[in-house]
Structure formats: C-alpha cells, structure tokens
Image (tube, rainbow, N blue to C red):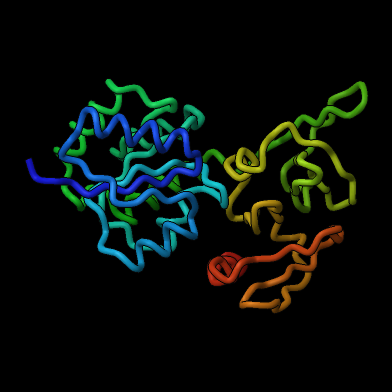
Amino acid sequence: MNESRVIIVEDEAGAADNLRLLLEEIAPHIRVIATLTSIEQTLAWLSANDHPDLGFFDIQLEDGLSFEIFRQSEIDFPVIFTTAFDEYAIEAFKVNSIDYLLKPIKEQDLRFSLEKYKKLSRSNVSNTLMRRIMDSLQSHQETATFLIHYKDKLIPVADQDFAYFYIGNGLVHGCTHKHEVYPMEHTIEDLELKLNRRQFFRANRQFIVNRSAIKEIGFYFNGRLSLKLSPPSKDVVLISKARATEFKEWMKG
C-alpha cells in the first residue's frame, strides 16, 4: 500500500499523541509529517510545504476555529475533523460528506474514517465544499438569546445587544452597548460558534467584537490593527497582522 502523508492540527498534546499512536497501530502506511497547534502555524506550514494526502483537524484551536484555515488557504486534500461539536454541526458535516471523529477518538471510529478516506479523491474536499459547510453552520447563527444569571433572576439578552465579549481574570464576560457587564456561562470558543459571523468577529484570544461596536480602526506596531470600541474596553483590542486582511474584508461586509 502506498504511503500516505498526514498532518495533525490539534492544540491538545495528549489528544495529538493519542491520535498518532492509534495511526501507528492500525495504519502503518500512514506517516505523520507534522503536528500543528494553531491556525497561524498551520497556515505558515501549508504555504511553505507540499500539501499532505490527508489532514486531521481539531475544530477548536488555541487561536480560533480551524475553519479559518479554509478561508485563508486553498485546501486541496481530504480532512477528517476531530470534535466535540454540537449535533447540528455534525449533521452539517454529514450532509457535505466530510467525516468527523468525536473525541476521545476510538480505534473503531478511526478505522471507519480511514476506510472512507481510501474511497475519496483529493477533489472531494475543497474550499467550495467548506463554504457550503460554513453556510450550513451560519443558518444556525442568525439569532441567539442568552439567559444571564444575575443575582436571583434570569435576564434574556439578545446577541446584538452585546458590544463585545472578553476574557478577564480567567472568566468570560459580555459587555452590552449600555455598558452593562454580565458573566457568561460559555467559553469564548462556544460563543464564537453561537454568534452570527456576519455580525461578530473573533479579534484575538481574548475578544469577540460586534461590528456595531467598532468606532475606529488604528494602525499598530508590526502590521497589527487596534480597535476603538464603544463602550470602551479596559484592554487594547488588537488584530494580528496575519488576520488584518481578513478583518478588513469582514468589515466591508
């Protein structure tokens, strides 16, 4: 059997090691040529190396969702997602014929995915297909209402009422346009999935910003952008050089 070159995109070292060991055990023809931990690192690797025959992509990475890789690079190889995603997202993958593995990954499930991979051609996974997946996910993100625990009651707050979400002292908070700050019962990654991508942008690891809260965009050191928000945030909100172009395109709508 011909050798297959594989990359693993996973920010949890234990999960990456587990997948690598399973592959060595059940698929000796597969050679892992790179283990990458972030969107930025993966994009850099893909631009500098020949593309692999197959990729295992965790969805939630340390600097955002791995979907961003498909937005910024031409992916011409099959991808198997590893995820603990909501059921509706998994259904989107099924409809669009992209396989997925629920973590922790089981040997039998991995064998099934590899069998499916053997039947695929490189053209089975493309950026066009990924855009269809993103559209499927987007249909679940048009509106969202959060029930906020505040003192002895629950307060419904619509997503568009939030100016931004941020991590402070290890906790996620939402700041409304009225400068009301609420504790959130979601991780920043969960919020990124739930919110409408046309309205909200993951600025960096700490911030998700509402388009309507952005009042000014400044130039910062090393090609980065700084955002002036309303209401103002305590911390400087920066967009990395790697994501500056994507952010400007998003702002244009």
